[in-house]
Image (cartoon, rainbow, N blue to C red; front, top):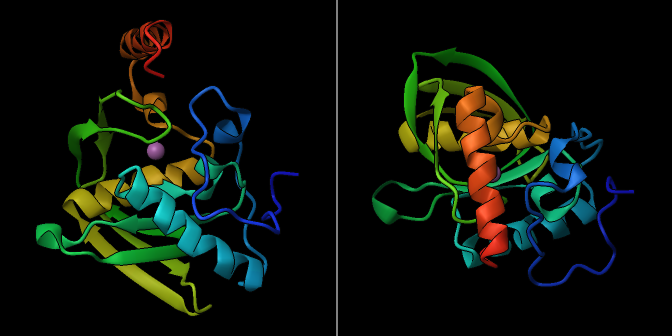
Length: 178
Ligand code: NI
């Protein structure tokens, strides 16, 4: 039952790594922004900041629900954003840049993304919101939304690049770095 939010949430949740089945599964929409969702969101932010990371999707903490948090403030300023049931309404342009993922410790890959995205979602207060983003925020939002669809960053790679990354992961496991 990975759609349920545990009753007793710790202050920080463990991050699941690539290889865990929850990461390749399509997450379930949140039916109502209830008390359990409101308890989960701050724990997701705390977990993300502790790593540290700039984005975290609920499946990465083993909860297969369509919830994600990001904080990509300009100039290092904090700009926390919680998105429930997010959807991409528009995308424009193409960029290719390096990405990492908390579920792939130590791995960096170059992923093609849209340069601009417009998203709609529900926020933690249950209100509909729209987010327009470019640059790092745009990339981060696309990366986290992928997690909600069971897609991880290496799924965007060519087969040789993917195999190379899988080999790197195997090495990291062997070296105790995974
Ligand atoms: Ni990720």
